[in-house]
Length: 95
Image (cartoon, rainbow, N blue to C red; front, side, top):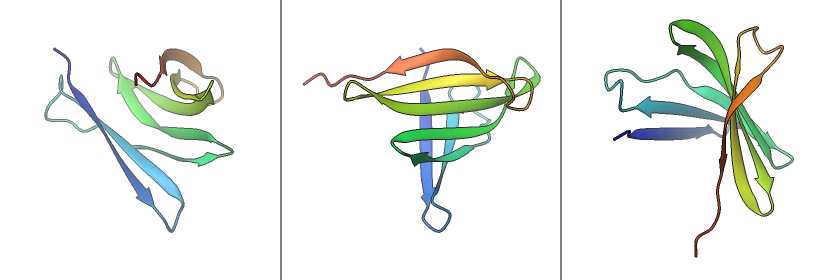
């Protein structure tokens, strides 16, 4: 079983979110936060990460698709010049 938690905080003075990802597979580690904000209904959050021992940049982009949120996760190995989307999560209301 895989368990994780996403912790977010909002800095009102900076108008900026910080989001930490805690992965139950590595219980002694807390990943560095991604930071960003929402502009024109699009949220963009970027930060450093380590994947398979390599330093990468990670980006989460939240958008609205047909009245439902979508989150895309992308990785960059060239400091944000190019991004490879590798995970998309579409949410839908069940009630």
